[in-house]
Image (cartoon, rainbow, N blue to C red):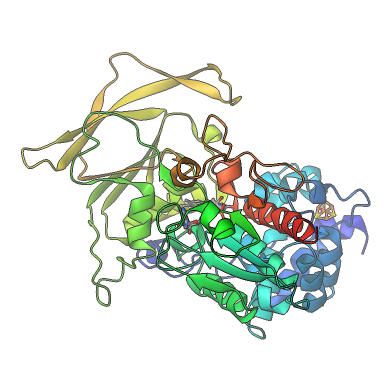
Length: 474
Ligand code: FAD
Ligand code: SF4
């Protein structure tokens, strides 16, 4: 095909559940491409010799290579190429912010003057992974060949994407790996944070099952720093190396009046109750969750989008999303913003909470907000919001969900002597090996980067595993 013919192919839209139906169920919103759609979309790739899309991929997947295979209907061949560098394509095809990564640099999008018309790389990746999923247990099991045992033992703390990747790569290298997880279910944010309607939990579970099939042991309900300290693993329990992948699960709050009222949640708690504890499923679960009727969600990132869309699914009649900058500055994925709006979340941009109002019983009755305008760019490069004096107004709400960011959990740094962190509490590592200031102790993912993305966490886990393998080889 000539480039002109490729450019004439219409971008393939993703089939989705109808917004009015999906806003009240937990099933996945995006339904996935058919084989024909995946092939047609892959044919739009111009096979650029300079491969600009690859520069935007944190794990440098050979994108034109896999798209060429997919365009011929060789989805198995396409997946083989993806798996050379990515361990979790079914997850990443769903949740990666492609519009800020590979698709941002795509020549097709640029030539058509619209980033939304870039080749839908993530959707094709997802299709290839889902197709194979019907035939194998999961992405990890399909690419798992275990080397002969080295006799070395590795402790992996946490079970999020950084830890899953590190554990898989260490197990494949022949080490005896045990994971330690504070919660009662493995998967990190993939199970407790990102909702079922964006990432079905069966996908994450199949990867955890694949890890177990590789010989990885998983200890749940095990809080490292309390149940056992990092140095105990090395000095008392016979482990030869430790990986810390404990993420950034410490919620930040606004520090405004009324934040201690009944009906105020941190987004992590709200999502954990709904996702991990399955509070949305009233009929078969005992775990309660406050079902607000008028909900205000504070923030503009993926977490805020997930919380506001979850509020609808928990039965809210009205959901406001309150963000102090404009929509252009929102850190959330464009697709999530679009989905939230379609489902009926009302966006109140350039507005922010000033205080939460309550009644004599200590329950939320309203939210006093202030209007804002944009001033000069701040340190993040985004124009900073400036409050407009006297612009206060009150929204009648019974629930407020605070989703203004997460910080790293201080438990492990505060209980591990000699573990260096920066001023934000992130563990400092050698950028080539991911080794920390303690010999034999490695770290990666959000605990090193701050709240980031699944693919970056996965890349960190992979680099740390290489560091561990080299370290254990002496
Ligand atoms: P995590 O996934 O946070 O896993 C850390 C694990 O360590 C957890 O299971 C935790 O319980 C465990 N742990 C913590 N402390 C201890 C301890 N002391 N002992 C034992 N275990 C411990 N990224 C995207 O790319 N796309 C998205 O769409 C997206 N949406 C998101 C939505 C939400 C609601 C949230 C919260 C995050 C989202 N992210 C998204 C970010 C992404 O999920 C994270 O960057 C990624 O999960 C980080 O991986 P990790 O392995 O470093 O840590
Ligand atoms: Fe294909 Fe876009 Fe990558 Fe070019 S930049 S090779 S068109 S995916």
